[in-house]
Image (cartoon, rainbow, N blue to C red):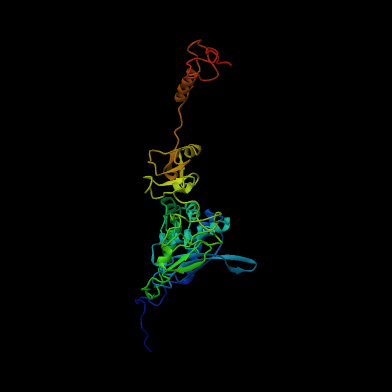
Amino acid sequence: MTTTDTSGLTRTCQPTFTTAGLLTALETAWAAIRTRHPEVPDAVLVVGSGSPAKGSQSMKWGHFASLRWQSGDTQLPEVLVSGEGLKRTPAEVFTTLLHEATHGLADTRGIQDTSRQGRWHNKKFATLAAELGLTAEKDDKLGYSPCTLTDHAAAKYAATITTLAAALNAYRHPEPTGDGKQRTNNNNGIAAECECPRKIRLSKTAFEEGGPIVCADCNAAFLPEDIDRDTYPHPTFGPACTHGDTPADSDPEDPMVFYDPTGERYGIPTYPFKFAPDGLATLRQLHAKNLRPGGQSVVAQLMWRRGKRVAYLYRIDLAVPKRTATPAQLAALERANQAKRVCPACGQLKPYQIPRRTGACLDCTPGGAS
């Protein structure tokens, strides 16, 4: 009987990908997000199809579905990561997890952050996304859905993204979709939705003639998906609608009018008051932490009160400790402050600084002591 030496052969039958390893990496990344943001709920993570049902629809990278799973007496939400999206970079896959975590944070706080059956992402979503380390940009069809990872968040989750990258060695091929039958006439050619959402279909001529068609339930106009409700001249009628964004982007009273994360409008990234991304701080906040900018440039700004108030933002990770004054510097500062309390008229040392408007103490100023 002869034996064959197989010591030099490559073991090609050993699998290099396991579903368990992928799900473990995704669950670890979700746990890392919850560690920094405890309000993000625990969830069941699944990997599924993100292929669109129609050729006119776009690929789905993930979704968040509240109370989709039951575990004993506990209901858990579902977070889906599409298998087609695993072909992207690890940072982009992690951005999808942060995107869905933003929906989870909104669900925990009872905030309606989407409309149009979850497709339109409103301004409330954008503010929550900034809180988790994302920069949301407005899309005409999806609202503030497109998100990118901030540099600070990327550095903060660097180890998590590296661990996730090791498990992303497989992806799902998109399912083929047909182009579908294209309508050639103009009869009932437009599908429009309100904010309930309910849907109607009408011709283009009927939509363009006369005033908008309004839903009696939510008081919102029926609009096609390709029309931005925020910029539509008549988005709501009658009582305020609670389903969508009010007011419009151009309303100066709306703090989100200053949400410009790309700096396209104001020159540098701009955020409303109290909505600065994690990792940035004003000069006063740095001083409260005993820090100073350390020569770094301004990276963003806060704007409020109709743009009359502005506070510049600096990166906390680039800040350096404040300098400690020497005894000689402290003594010189004390002498300078004491000189400001000496009245030029009577020469007496006062417990307050001499007012500049009078140039003399209150006793030497007519009517100053009254």
